[in-house]
Length: 104
Image 1: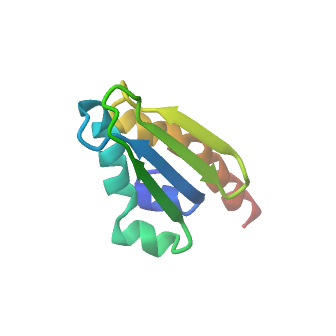
Image 2: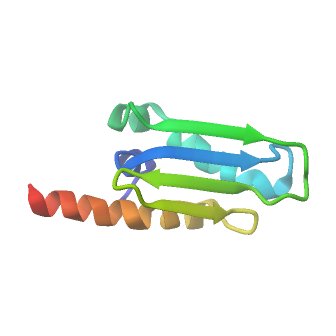
């Protein structure tokens, strides 16, 4: 899965909870910027993206992802790099892509 746009095809919802000005939220913000692109929206116009912000700088940022098959993933991204976040979210999306390719 080479891009967030192709990954977004297999997602139904992305919910990000973070303190936007906390340094630990950097990966969450960059992840959002990769998911909210014209290509990603074109690949999955029904993807629901929810952001919740709070002012607690000590609370870890969290990304909750729901895939088209109903599986959910929760990541605490405070200590993660954005590529690690994309890799984790992309793992199950790749499996769904492989399943789709095999049935085609």
